[in-house]
Length: 454
Image (cartoon, rainbow, N blue to C red; front, side, top):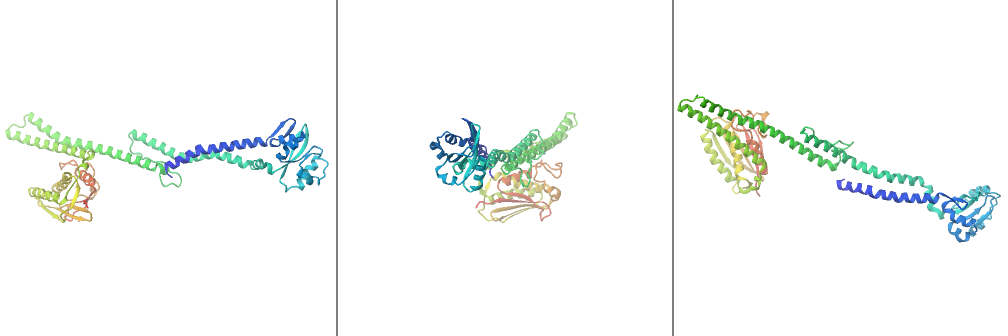
């Protein structure tokens, strides 16, 4: 049941059913008032019989008794005060000497006739009155079924409370738990999951209407926790990766100030080290800026249509020269057909290829092999980067795409651990995927999948 449907049910319950209860209450009050005894002008009798019976006792029966359904009126001696003309023939068959005998005989001999007998008191003297039961059918119904009416009355009063409680309690309980979770998150406690108590037999949190809200809140908590942990890793990485070159630069400058570099050759050597570390510092700052842009900018809006073959051919020319300088054996195998197009940011995709190639060079030795293969599979282009280096240990493979993660703790490489994270972000925002697989060459292997334009 959707939330708006549940709200409509609650509204109908709260507004309509009480109105019905009020109407029934008014009817019950009116009928009870009608069936109650009235004592006035010396006559005590049920209220609905008072006016016609009083007319009979005062000798005005012809004016009202026929329409009141009165058949017979007896005094305390059993003598007839009034008898309806249509009943005279039947009543004359009876013979009684007192009111008690009349009551007993009438009750015994006319059980199937739809009449009723009431005892009245007029001027301190009792008597009997017979009246047509059908004439007062409504009063009889309410009298006979008064217990049912009372039960219905209380049911209509209690039903809104029950329905409102059943419908609102899970919602209120869920919202209270969400409020508590929000308070904990506001206090910085991101470890407590957002949980709504389950009712018996339910397989989902709380009720269906708040499940999406709970899930969204839980996703927000997890994202906040991940961002918080990422920020902590960023601060640790920045403090480590920026402090190291700064410490070296500071040390060499202090050495020069202390006169440790006396000859021009020594001064040049110190200056070269300072320059190299300054370039490393600049490189790491640029990496951080680049990573921040990937997470915050709208670079996806710069997508354009271009040939994947042209991009790979451009990469082949550059990587082949770099491999020659670094003394690596480079091979490029292009199995794509002409005319294959993709949509994306050409510059960023080239940076992904360049990052993977640079990693392959960094983790291989001289004369090791680096191989790039490209082919198509359905509506996707598959690009594999493989090398014959040492590869990645299995315990590190599930973490290599995490921000600021490095298997060697960053002490032997120049990067700060965001290359593969950036590559993954770029590829996924192009609608593709990237994954690691051990290479048949013995080292690392990365497989990129990008969608082709059809």
